[in-house]
Length: 198
Ligand code: ZN
Image 1 (tube, rainbow, N blue to C red):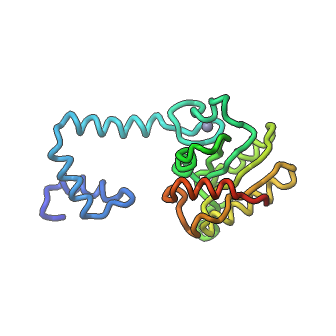
Image 2: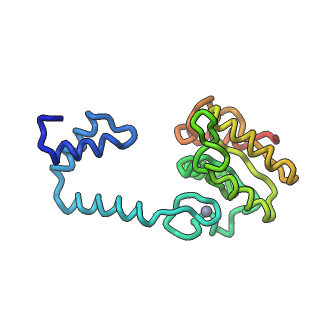
Image 3: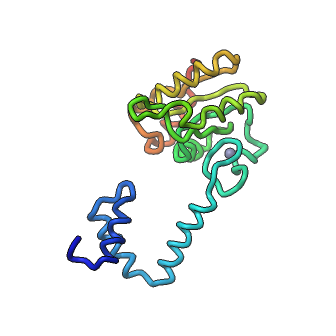
């Protein structure tokens, strides 16, 4: 990147540090930004800063939201006695897109991975267990079918079993190692319908 001035190189480096952006895409984006009207660039950067500052965890389900309690948790028409446990907010959005799930969620923000040194205390698991003190009928574990997702599902089911609350796992129609967000809505719906009790 020596052919460019320091400011351009810096912009490219920052962009290339984002996930999924290689050096070629970073270069393309940098030149695109440099050609944008200044107002548009200011609006883009202000939006990024504002989102980062204002978005926080929902007090109940820990999804990302700019409100104290997210719209799903606030919705009285939803079934608050059924909790679906997902790894992240993107997975929650994938299930919401099916329009078939009427319960609420709990977002773990990760999965247990001994290899990466991520333990039960590094995800929002304590927070899930606290929620189970309320009247809950069922916990549906919808972590990914990766090794980490399965390990997490097993761990959670062992924790919940003694409480007598029904624990189920979404069906394995979801391809192994598949990220939930890339799976089509019908497959997700079938996985939810075909869930089995653990
Ligand atoms: Zn919420």
